[in-house]
Image 1 (cartoon, rainbow, N blue to C red):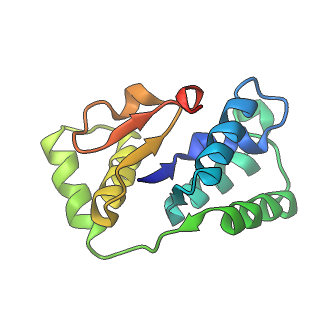
Image 2: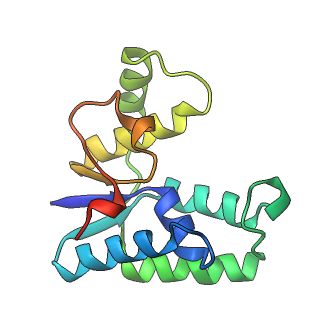
Image 3: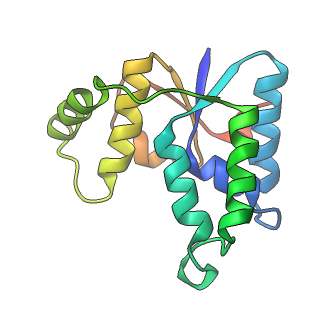
Length: 146
């Protein structure tokens, strides 16, 4: 099976003091040890940079650009970074119309579109409810990975 590590998994893995840190790290480590493919899309890394460099008092991690670069390099060395594709946009457009997607949920729809185009079947995420509307993907809570 192929798994996509959602941006929240990347963020919790980088935030050592966060209560979800150990679940995020354990889930990814376990999947990799099993020989599963765990991947990200460039969008995940862009979202990670956005949240990691945002000040902590604005719901970010408050990392410096150099610290964030180090974290992104770690992610790129551990996980497969799948390429962008022109096929993602029409799939995204189909999804946002079919599911009447509003506001910031368009970013989640783009993740699903990229998964569909790349035939990634499983989404490792703490935000299960954000993705329930989409069929064809299996949602996996990190705490369920043993």
